Length: 165
Image 1 (tube, rainbow, N blue to C red):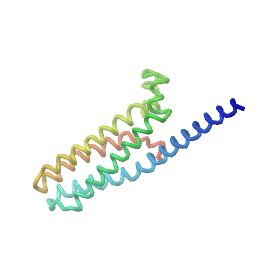
Image 2 (spheres, helix red, strand yellow; image 1 turned 180 degrees about the vertical axis):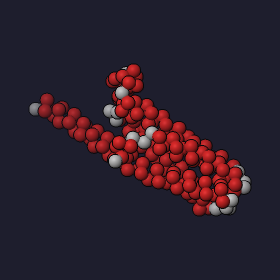
Image 3 (tube, rainbow, N blue to C red; image 1 turned 30 degrees about the vertical axis):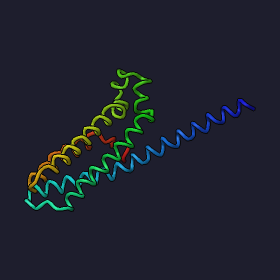
Image 4 (cartoon, rainbow, N blue to C red; image 1 turned 90 degrees about the horizontal axis):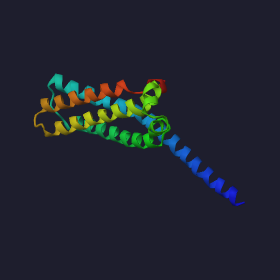
């Protein structure tokens, strides 16, 4: 009886782990659509503002802030997923770096995607921080346009497109 009880507890722990992993994967995958749309809109808004010489408004501030917020939420979910996913840190520790780097799928999930997405969020954060220090509209839009465009290009380069469609 005691043996069954121990097995049952392990099974419950394992099923909770699987449930947590699939939930995190679901949230990370579908939140990514929102992140992509919002960062794209914020980038286009910054480019339009810069090239059309319009005045920086509270609406522009909210769009850039919302892009910053959704990317940081995605980062938090992605970091948790990286540590619990068999394709993340577990892949590196169980297979070794040389094996992971030889396999393009493992390399994408364990190295390239996390690294490039962190760089994306760094660029978006720098752009948002630098634009707040500017006092005139044109330099504000310029900072947002430069850094959000770099972030968007990096993001688009390392999205696992085969999983999206």
